[in-house]
Length: 93
Image (tube, rainbow, N blue to C red; front, side, top):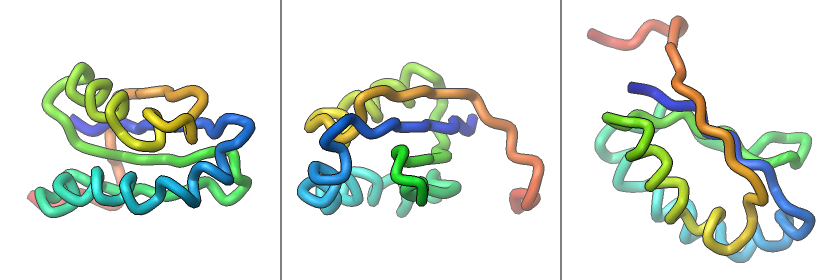
């Protein structure tokens, strides 16, 4: 199941983002190798980040983002997790 995860940066988010970016990407790397990252990146208005990731359950998505360096070190002040149905581009069967 896919989940859209929106992490909203806190007041010091941009400064903290620069410090913790490598650890955040390292945390995503195993999911990427498994083909579970649909897309991920910062919002260009500097509000935060959007990740669309695949997990078996919402609880697994919550656990992942709870331990992500951007959450742990306060880059994200608030996080929303929403189940997501990808319509396009069509996923390979």
